[in-house]
Structure formats: C-alpha cells, structure tokens
Image 1 (cartoon, rainbow, N blue to C red):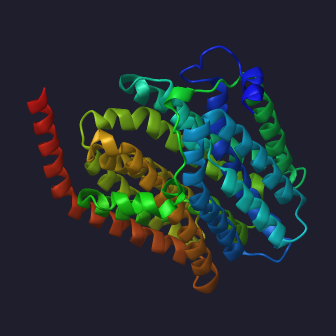
Image 2 (image 1 turned 30 degrees about the vertical axis):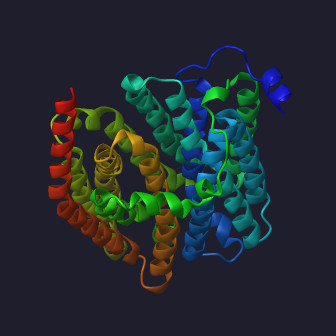
Amino acid sequence: MKRLARSSAPSQPPHRLHPFILFAAFLSTFYIGLIGPILPALVEQYGGNALTIGLLFSSYSFAQFLSAPILGAISDRYGRRMVMLVSLCGAILGFAMFAIGGALWVLFVGWMLVGVCECWIGTAFSYVADTTQPSERTRYFAFLTAAIGSGFIVGPATSGFVSRISPVAPLYVLIGLLVFAVIWGYFSMPESLPHAQRSTELPLSQLNPLTQTRDILQFPQIRLLLLSYLLFWSIVILPSSNLPSLVADRLNWTPEQISPLLVSFGVTVVLMQLIVLPLLLRRFQEIHLAIVGGSIAGFGFFLIGLFPITGTVQLLYGGMAIYSLGQPLVQTCLTGAMSKSMGADVQGRVQGSIAAVMALAQVIGPLWAGWLYEAVSPTAPYWSGAVQVLVAVAVMLIAMPALQRLNREMNAEQNEYQ
C-alpha cells in the first residue's frame, strides 16, 4: 500500500490551495444543488412525496453523522489523500445506484452510501490547514468557501439545463465529474499530512460521533450557542429538500424552472460570504451579526410561508432573497463566536462538535419539514422555520452577556501574557 502511494502520488510539495482541492470542495455542494430540482420527479415515479424527500435527506445526513468522525480520524492516521480518493469512489457507486433506480429503497441505499462517503469539505479544510500557517489560513479558507458556495450556483443551473433530456440525465453528468475527479486526484494530488505528523493510533473513542459533543458541552459558554446552531441549521436544508416540492405542487414548475430560484440563492450567499461579511466583521462582533442575520432569515421564511396562501411568486423570490442575506451571517458568525470563546487547545473538538450538531440538524430538519408539509400544510414548514429561527435568536441573546464577559477575560489574559 505504501509503495503504491509513493509511485502514484506526485513528488512535488503540496500547494497551499491545490486546484484539485478547490474542485473537490466545489463538488461537495454541486451535487446537492444539482439533485434538489430533480428530486420530486425522481421520487414521484416510485410513489414518493415530499415526506419521502425529507426521509431521503435525513437518511443521508444520519449516515454522514455516523461516518464523519470515523473518516476524520482515519485521515489523521493514514492521510488526506487516501480518504479523499476512496470517498469519491464510494460516491460514484452511490450516485450510480441513484441514477439506475428501480425502487425507492434503491434511492435510499444509494443516497445513504453517498452520505457515508461524503467527507470532502472536512478533508479539504484539513488539507488547507496542513499546508498553511495560522496567520494566513483564514485567507485561504475564504477561497475554499467561495468554491464550496459556487457549487450551489452551478448545480441548480446544470440540473435545469440537462434535465431537459430526462430527470436522471443530471446524475450522469455528476458521475462523469466524479470519475474525472478521481483520475485527476490520483495523478496530481500530493499528500498534505507528513508521516511524522500523523496519529500513531486510532482509539475507538475517536469513532463515536457523540463523544466530541459530550466533551465540549462541559464548557458552559458554548452550550447555548450550540443549541442556537442546532435550531438554525435544521432549517438551512429546506431550500434544497422541501422548496422544489412546494413549487412543483403549487406552480407545476419543472426542474428547469426551479433552478433559477436556487441559483439566485447561491449567488447571494457567495457574495455575502466573500464581500459583505468581511466588511461587517471589521465593525461588529460575530454574535451581534449572528443575531441580526437570524432576524433577517426568519423574516425571509415568513414571506415564503405566505406564498402557498397567496400564490404570489414575488413573495417566494423575495423571501428567498431575504433569507439568503441572513443565512450566511448566522452560519459563519455563530461558528466564529463559538471558536473565539474557546482556547487554542480545544479548537479541534469545537469544530468536531459543530460538525456533529450540523449533521444531526440535517437529520431532524428535512424529516420534520416533510411531515409538516404532508400532514399539516405546505405552509407549515416555513412557519415552523421562522419560529425556530426566532427561538435561536432568543437563545443567542441569552448567551450574549456571558459570551462577551468571557471574551473580555480571554483578551485581558492574552494582553497580560504579552
């Protein structure tokens, strides 16, 4: 195995931001954006509905929740390159099952296999962290974030264009891109984690997704922030998991018509992350921006909830536009607030807990939204989302005084040390 790795991996040192890593990060969200518009058509041919789509997303996220800590620990032990390439191969198999179909259970097995293998974002960030100094890391993370966000733009656009051939045609485009990524990565991606810096063992405790969160909850200052993150993130997946069903049922939109709505959402999120948010962070604290972003996102969901009642498409587009302004503020700033509230020696556990909470939220959110859509009304998921966001904002407000006090104490200790 070691001999194969030496002969296949390039001998040059890894780039700080290798083009393949950017492409892999792009694919990690490209397939979500690509599948969203075609899911209603795919599941309906086997008798599925909005609840089925919610179950699909929840099963995918649950598989990801279980596998993420395992793959992360394996990459610390055996390197990023091997984990990335094996994960891409597993995703090819999963999407091939999804494309061939034949029954609903085949879709579920294929989608869960993708969830088990999907570690590209975490591995990409680890790769960049391996090859950069802390002082320059955030700048490179920004480029990586832009590649990730662009997948939400290109994915729906590709889906809308290619689905004119057939509902499954976009899946074959995706499989082709994954095959290309495996070949490119195999011949061009250097290993970023030297043998001397790898873990020497793989304890079972590192393979338990609940252990990291349990340990980090011992720190009281971020308990409320993690709760806010759970409440908010459980509705973040709604534009991909539920909104296509809503517009397909109410407006009879095809994937080609659904795609521009999701593309505009992705464009706004990327622009917010790369241009607006850095400017705001120069003047405001993360927790303040997260609270404002949550309020904006909640209002966006309120407007989307009015759409099924009124049938006004402008409310749908307006609600999505407003939500796309608030969502990046909450996602990025809440993560930053949790990170800054903890010392450098526990940053890995903090990020692991955030990832575990995010996956857990993506299990609960689509399932809850799908049930509300079918059992209550098409409006219910968005009213529920608006309420959840407001509760998350209230929790942030409760946490803010203690968080600010802790940050002052940490800054005072840092100045004393200097």
